[in-house]
Image (cartoon, rainbow, N blue to C red; front, side, top):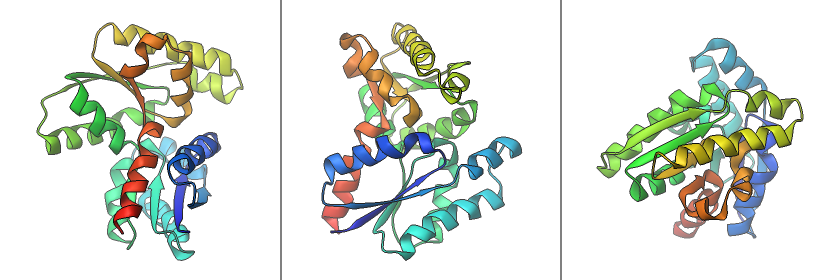
Length: 219
C-alpha cells in the first residue's frame, strides 16, 4: 500500500478530497497536511512571495519525508508556485485543478470559471492559459465571482452559500459551453443543479483521483 500526501490550506476541503482520492485508490493511505495560516498570509500579501513558496514547500516536504509517493496541492490560489515547489522535491507534486482544466478545454470553446474567493481568479486564469497553450486550443475563459458566498460559508450559512453559487452557475451556463467550479468548497453544489446541466459542470474532484491512479499505476 502506497501513500499520497494531500496538502490543504483550509479544513473545508479535507473530507471531500479524501473521498475523491480513495474512491479511485481505495488501497492508498492518505496523509493530510493542513495549515490555514498560509492562505491568510497570501490574502494579506496580495500575491505569492518567496516566503509563501517556501512555506508550501515545507508542507509538501513533510509528507514526502514520511513516505508519500506523490503529493496534491488542493489550494487553487497557490497553483502558480507549485512548479517551484516541484523543483525542490523528488516526488510528483500535482495541482488539483489541472486535470479538470484539461478536460474542460478539450470539451468547450467558451468556458466559465465560478469562484467564491477572489484570490482564486488570477492563479486559476494563469493555469488555464498554460494548459490551453499546451493543448493548442484557442478557447475563451469567462470568470465569475460569487461575491457573498465565501463569507456565508465561513459564517455557517451553507444553504445561502450554495443557493448563490447555483444561481451564478446556471446564469453562466446560458452564455457558455461548460463551467468549472474553481474551488473544492463549492464542488457539492453540482448535486443541487438542474440535472440537465450535470454534464456541463466540472469539479477538480471529478478528475484528481483518476489522475493519481494513472501516476501510481505507471510507477
